[in-house]
Length: 224
Image (cartoon, rainbow, N blue to C red):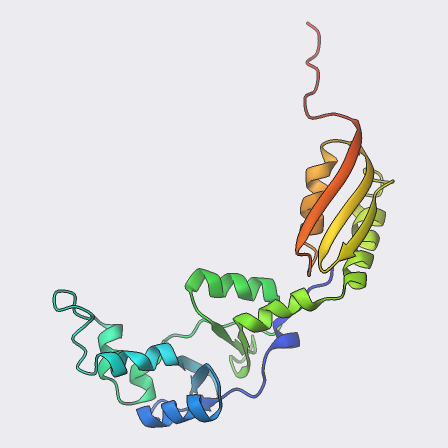
């Protein structure tokens, strides 16, 4: 099955800086490069942390680090960011990273789980920074052409895994919406086929209009 990988969509022109970079230098990088993130690296170009506008805006709104409310002061990391003057003090660390072979679906799941908008991409063996993948990068999977999606469903599923269970099923695809028509041998094959089609990269929705030759959802109990 086709899977878009982080290396296929990541940016390789990643803004980087060093831990001692001044606060104003970080602001200039974000503004001048028109980027959402700056990766803080060590001398071997391994990520130490990541700086985003969300990290820097804490100082703008609360430079003394008192916290959002008098009775709810910042603690630990947030106070450090509010009062920090260099990259090492305001960055989010350690960074959550991906590998070039990470699929865009896996990358999107990680970003959603950790409520972050980008992942530095590193080489698995050295940890060296090779790129940056963002939330919008992961959406490239949905730019896949309809004919490619349709051909994969036919080749891998209808003529492959479900060849015997769904020999008479046809598929059409428009704007990522897949429509299945025809007959399946057993009713239990329908949800499995729909789930398999939904997992094909680029599929937005599955609409099925399938009839079943045998309803095996409620097997008849054996006679005593």
